[in-house]
Image 1: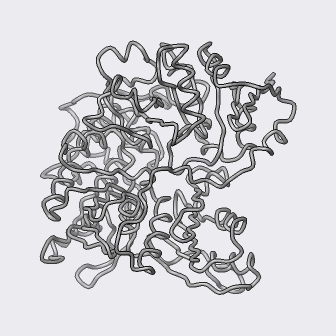
Image 2: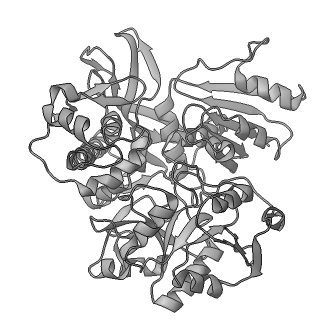
Length: 564
C-alpha cells in the first residue's frame, strides 16, 4: 500500500490523500478554515489522520521552496505538523515540487483525462519562480505547452516566461522555444482588468460575468499588440497581480476618478468584454500551436485560465476534431492532486493511463446520521423528492446538502442552492439573497438525456462538471430566463442517476411538475464566503441569510430554519 499526502501551498491551498492511486479525499483549506482563498493547508493535513495512521510520502507543491518554518526547531511547517501529529511514529519520504508548477497543473489534467498521450496547454498567473544562466533575476511562468505520455513524461515544447527586463528569445529545444519577455501573460492581463473593475485580482470569474454587458469600444486602448499584452496598458506586479496604467490613458483615468464605488461603468464593462475576447483569441492560438508542435489530437487545458467556462466552450466550436479536456480543478488547488498522482505514476513507472476522472465529489466523508444533532431549534420534517420539487416550484429557495463536497469551485448538487429556473426575475432574487453583484449569472443542472433539447453542446453529449457556458437553443431563454445570461449562454451541469442519484431524482420530480428537466443551481454560500463544507457551516449560512429550507436527501428530511 502506498499512502501519499500532497499539499498545495499558496492561494487556494489544498490537501489530497491518495492511497494506491485513488483519491481518498481532496479538500481546499478555505472549506475548513472558512477564509476565502486561504493558504497553508494545515487543517487539511490534520484531516489526513482521520483516515490513516501513517503516510509514506509527503508532496509539497508551490511556486518556490521557501516557506514558513516552526519556532525553535526551524522545521518546515508541514514536517513539523506531521511530527507533532504522529509523535515520531513513522518515517516518510518528502518531495518538494517548486520549479515545475505548470507541470503539476499538467499532471492534474493529463492524469485525470484518461488519455494515453496529450498536448497540455497551461495558462496561469505566475507559475514557478525560475532562475537561469541565460537571464538575470527571476522569471515567472505564464503559458506552457507540454507533450505528455506514459511512462509519465512532460516534454516542454513551448514556454512563455515573464521578467521585468526583456532579454529576447532563447532556444529551448529542437521542437519548440522558450520565450522570455517583458509582456504579461494572458492570465495576468485578465487579473489587471479584474482589479480595474473593482474586484480582487483572483476573482476573475466576476469579470467573466460582467463581460457580456460590454461591447466593442474603439476609444479604449488596444489590450494586445502583435500577439502580446500591450505594456502601455498593463503593468505587471510579479508575481502578484497586475494593474492598468490609467495615467497613460485619459479615458481610463477619468472613469476611475469619477465613477461611484459599487457601480459598474460602461468603460469597465467594455474593458471586461475586451479582455475576455482578446484572451480567448490567444488561447485558441495556443491550442493551434499545441496541436502543430506535438501532433496530438488530445488536448488538456489547465491553470487558472482553465476555469474560464466561456472560453472553454469556444474551444469546442473552434476545434471539432480535437478531444479537449478542461480540468474542473484547474486552479492552484488542483496541483495537490497533480502532485500526488505525479509521484504515484513516477514511483510505479506506470505504462498506461490512470483511471479517468469521472466524479469530483472528493470532500471528506461525513455520517449523515449525525446531521440532525446540529439543527438546533430548526423544524425537521419527513420529505420526498416530490415534496422538495413542489417547494421549489412554489418559488422557494431550497438548499441541498449531501455526501462529499465537490472539488473545485463549482457546486454540483451536493452543496447547492436551488431555485425554479422559470421565474423571470430569479437571478435578481437569488443574487439579492446571496449578497452578490447584480450582473452575476447562475448555472443550471439538467438531466443528461434532455440536454440536447435545450442547449447547443457543439457535438458533445455532456458537461458533468459545469466547465462550459454553452449557447441555449432558440426559444429556451423564454422558458428558463433566470439561468440564461445576457449573451444567451448558461453554464450547465449534466446529471445522470449514476453520477448523483438523489439529485437526478429531484430534477426528474421537478420536470413532472414543470415540464422543465432543469434546476437553477448555485453554490451553497453567501457572497464572499467559501462553499459550505460541514453541516455546521450549512446551518450557520441559513441562519445568516433569508434562506429557510435545507434538504437532506440521505435522510429524506427537510430542515426549516425559524428565522425571525
